[in-house]
Image 1 (cartoon, rainbow, N blue to C red):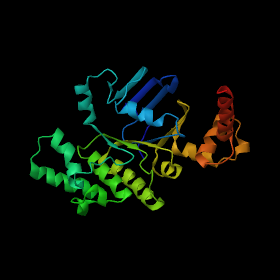
Image 2: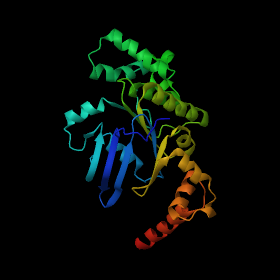
Image 3: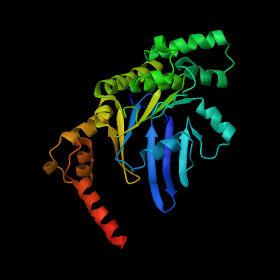
Image 4: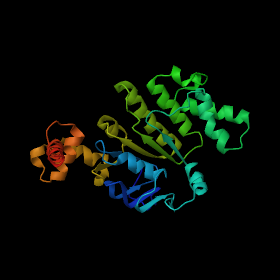
Length: 282
């Protein structure tokens, strides 16, 4: 596990980020540091803002206010050309894999190499085999995406994400829609690639089994705010502490989410909110 007590600068630094869509404030003053070489899991319930935070970190949307830095550079003020140079330093595994259906697996992996490098085709072919071997798909290079299972599509998308040897890998719900065994294999692949390639990984998920399997540190969001950031062990302790031993409402809320309990402050808040909203619609 990486050492976060040293003086390393964050590879990603988010400060006081606020983002609203219409009247809805989705991010409300987010602060988050991601350190080199760690696996940071960002989690929370549906609508908590985790996917919006990810989109800010990859520069696809700009905050209403606040700062987002990658590699020490403020990306909220970069031109599109400057941002494209930054994007070459990170890879993204989208929830669906986002493969181009008209291209083979190998051609999907080759796409960023052909677009962003001057490598000759022989070298690109070697790179394709190396990247696919890392995700155990080398023998499937000539298959079309439609011929792949859900887990294989995720792995093919991951091979494409690492094609340019990125320094950061972003994962958007990597376990979504997968059976437990395949999900566990993807989790192990995230750990292996992070360690073997010496990259920093940011994983957005609401799958707790996956989160506790892969995380070095964890960040929980709720209603656009950071509830807690800490080492995985801190969250494990909170999850396993009996509810009656917790005095903080915030800790009880986090515990319910981590455990997936049906009853608790999250479910009671949702019931109260639905009732209030129903009254206001009259």
